[in-house]
Image (cartoon, rainbow, N blue to C red; front, side):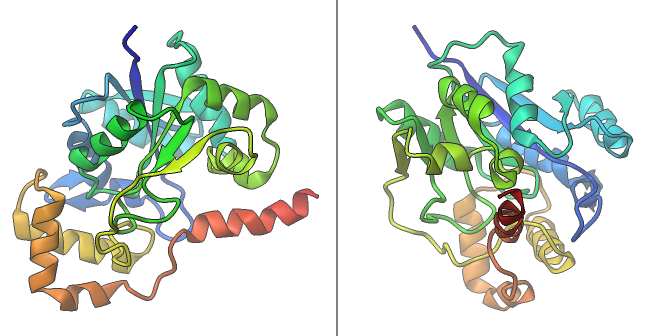
Length: 255
């Protein structure tokens, strides 16, 4: 039996650090649309869904994404784990089917890198595989891959704020699952190619404007930034995974 691969790309417009960042325009197109179109180049993904909240604040995001022809699921604002589970529950997946978690602040994501992790997961006997437990790539190219069975167990058992808001910590940390990091030599994993702050958006915009296209590869990005390393100073003072670290602090209030 072939396993279905469903990619869930989570995004909202009310981020505290850079509100409405996913709708900010690059080359006359919302940032989130660039990411969806780049992700849609995957050879493995059977269904790509943008999962956002059911709040009025995300109505415009949902409308724009649907206008570009992409699937939308709207669910719980803060319990993103519930949002993920509800989005795929209606797809009648088998326990062995595959979920790919992506986040909407990664407009430079490369379908080849996404497929690399999916293929590694398929060829492994693990329950969860990621390229970011020990980061392989720059921040902004993270991929998490797990089976539907693991998502289901997490949904019915996770309780901490960080587990609900960030979907996969229960799978990674509970000890109930076989977890693997992608086996590959790190490639500029200290670079920052995600968008949380205005300085991040400035760097991403410069990269897109250089290529003047939605579609260019990670290797092309590397070649460009190697020749223009002063651009990396634009946002190199920001800490990786600030949002997750904030949730871990909130876990202390759960106890």
